[in-house]
Length: 173
Image (cartoon, rainbow, N blue to C red; front, side, top):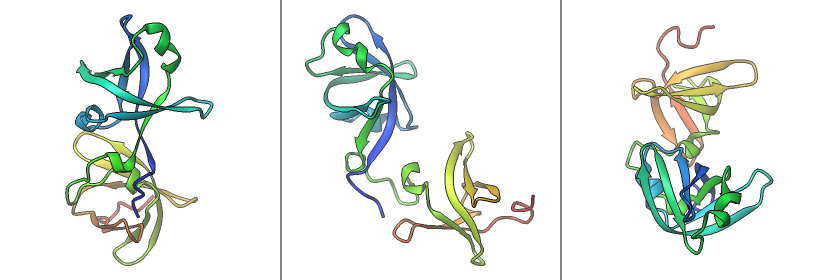
């Protein structure tokens, strides 16, 4: 089940930019439009403190995102934000297209084969370029499952389950 108010990590503040209070951030999303369209961001520090900010402006700067937060127009007012992680509420993100999923919705799914064999839980996802790789762990074993239609036959977020049909040899260690 997808929780609309769940906080989703979308990036991290890496540095200040200039003297007028801009921040440089890295986006953890392949879709920078999702990042750039946000009007409100939650910045969390390593000690758990968090602050909500309104975004005055955001733009791409090479592979980074430049952020200007409302009422913060000086480098001295934003330096303390460097290193903070950037979150949004899940409900602020657009619904993915059919057959597409946010990683945060997949992590934790129970993974079964088409024969009903329990493989474990999806614990992490690797982006490889051509297709993602799902890392499934069950405490004893780790499986690397390619995220392709021939292998991943069903994803049911309401039931928190993923069904896979691994090719011969994929599950052998």
